[in-house]
Amino acid sequence: MTKQPRAGRFLGVPYDWRRPTLERVKSRWWNLDDPRLFTPKAYGWGYDINLARLLGRKPKF
Image (cartoon, rainbow, N blue to C red; front, top):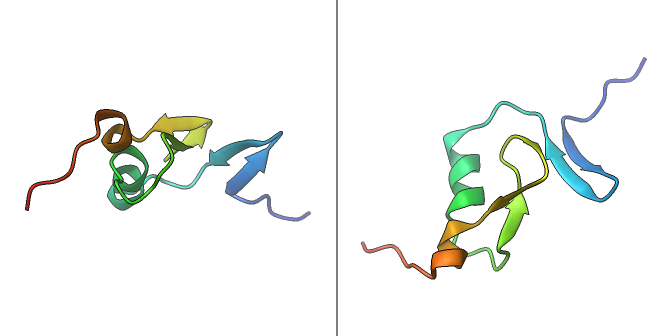
């Protein structure tokens, strides 16, 4: 029996069943470098919202 992939697409919808990491969550929820408003979920099946794009915010350093 072959092992199923832990991340990919099913019926065109992204999924990721790997344990979520802080880096992955940040890259999906707050990423100004990603032009997409809807990003693949950090954990689970479906989409997350890129809040940086939604709010149009730039980080202050």
